Image 1: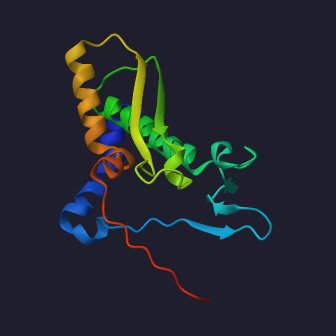
Image 2: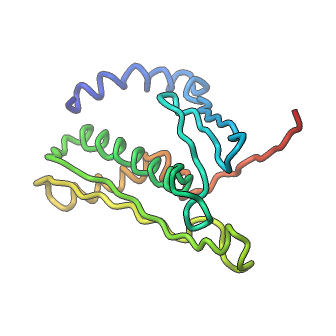
Length: 169
């Protein structure tokens, strides 16, 4: 897909959102079911069932997915799609590319071992390794716009309010 095809595909969508801002608000959903016999949650991905469990650093077997890994994978997926879309829109040719993310966790926090240890990632590093011949200023613009338009990156960076409820059924 080139820049013109991308613009043509997105133009009617953008026009609709410009004329009807409410149409742009969409609620994405995720669902999971607690496992009956293991400390795990079965997450419906739309393609398959993903079973998340404890990370080995907290006593897990390593057989189930780690939700921390899944968060980083969501960041990589979103950033990869975004960098590709932005590069396409800006006519920046990419011969190939890789996206990686890594995050540092202090598991003492999640295990309640040390009250001063944070629960969650202390730092996340996102990296793009792109094979392209464009000038550095174009790469800088590509990175800036990728950061700006990557939903998962912006969500992690901004830390939106999260409403949590528990109900008896």
